[in-house]
Image (cartoon, rainbow, N blue to C red; front, side):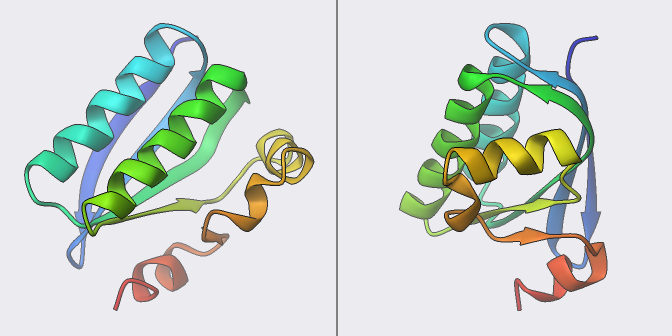
Length: 114
């Protein structure tokens, strides 16, 4: 299953609900385009809801890091929400867990942008 991205706005934070796989090719390109598009429109607060992401490969990880870096350089913030166990373990293994702000609760994640 390819990556599906649904966007919604909650209190000035754009939440991207991701579902499927973030992998080399289509999935990582979709994520990159979505995040860069938001930053290009001046959106500074981006929350990636990863509760439905069932697989992420090295290319997908690279895209997450790229999204984070691009946002940071533009004065924006990309944070992660509801990691699945697989994705959580992968971020722990690659030490990226310490790079991202990660939340289990959407309300807490939204509040963290204030």
